[in-house]
Length: 167
Image (cartoon, rainbow, N blue to C red; front, side, top):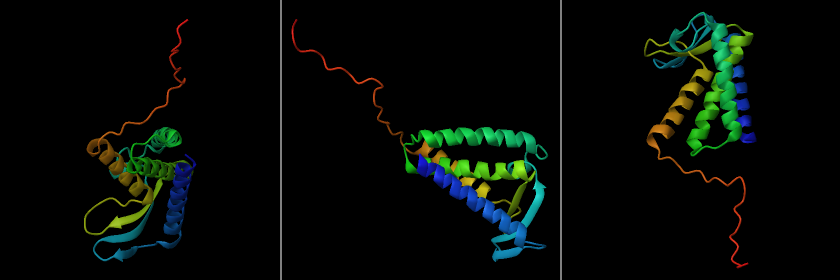
């Protein structure tokens, strides 16, 4: 459980560092990282919605939804009853991504985006978005493609041995 929460904290911290660096160093046209594939371009204050601009302008409602989802994901990580490591990591990524963007919505008023695909017309996104996408993919693979593992459950009350003696 502690490891799960530590992983979430490290990923959220990384997201904050990346967003702060983008805000501090990216200006104008941006930077090409991989020609024709990936670049960095700051989009501050423009993302008040969810994925692909859905629910744009509803930052407050999205913050509440993100907060509730983050709390539920944290509970799942504390309970720590995953069938596969990929499932566990999926929930860690989902939780960290949700908290990363929740922070922006609550304290900045919009989500800071800075990653841009150059080979296709696609919305600018950030590390937290990548975490959410990868987390969803991992959980989906575990749910739809991997066999369900039986979790060993210990009885709440130990079974008593039958009495072999006759009275």
